[in-house]
Image (cartoon, rainbow, N blue to C red; front, side):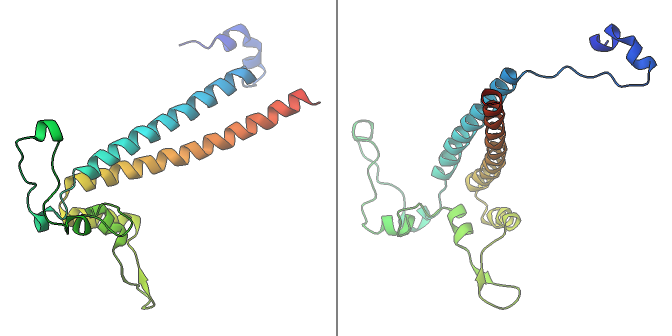
Amino acid sequence: MTDLFTDAHPERWALGKQPEKPHMNFERKVVITLAAHETCLQQIKRLTRIIGVCIGKCQNGYDQIGPRPASAHDDILGILPWPNGEHHEILHDEQHRRKTHIWGAFQHREPSSCGYGMVGLQIDEIADFLADQECVHCTRAWHFILERKRVKKDLGHLRLSIRGLGKSALKKLIP
């Protein structure tokens, strides 16, 4: 593949200088940065939806309350709730969050290595905890949570880039 700039200016190579690459214009930088920003936002939304689906499939606590009652009207009324009134307390915490295996990993506390107080699991320990629980849904949710975390970090970098572009725009407008 030939470089058009080098072919157009062979005297630069004769002088031992690297050819200068043409600068990207300001408008193109803005468009590319805004498109990347929107892409990150869409990825975060998509990953959040996938995480919700994975967590919704977790069966943690169902062994304690038994199967849902079958109804002849499931197609009309939808699936009916469990008949015992304690199912909500078994499946949800005080803030009405579903007690999944991943919830258990975040709530897990153990004595600290220095002997003072209790500590939660580190990020790399959560994957091991979920593997021990043998819940493929929560393990997949954890994978997508980590991916969403990386995308959010990229989003933060893009927001800094947008701020830098805004400062450059102000310098162009106000000499």
